Length: 172
Image (cartoon, rainbow, N blue to C red; front, side, top):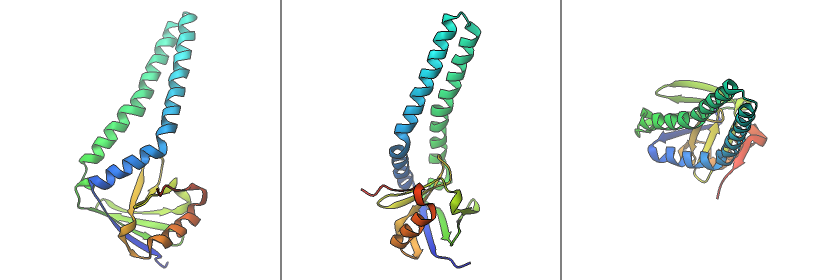
């Protein structure tokens, strides 16, 4: 199959920090709304359990709330700290992307992956990068300056057609 675009993006702490800022702008409001909803839900259930003298149920709900908060907050901080200490941010980690008609390939020191466009969660375009999300939490960082085959402007039109409504333009 004919390669349409090729990109080489060098990862560093700077790129990762820019990505985290973009991710926060993209998802912070909805994450807070869900967290408030679950805290209120668990809180109301605990109040009703205490009111009905169902202390065991109230304790189970309190434990459930604690697990939820640990999962949403502590796990996120641990993942970010782990990423910051990884080889990816040492400045020598390079992702090579090859984009074809129906899929793209990613090559890096950790291995190779082939991903179909219809399986992508979202693509966010910013002034300097494309963030190609494979899930809500994980994304590939593609630098607009890293194209060795094809142009960034052409890639923008191409990826927009491939993911359609899952494409977000965040150029400011």
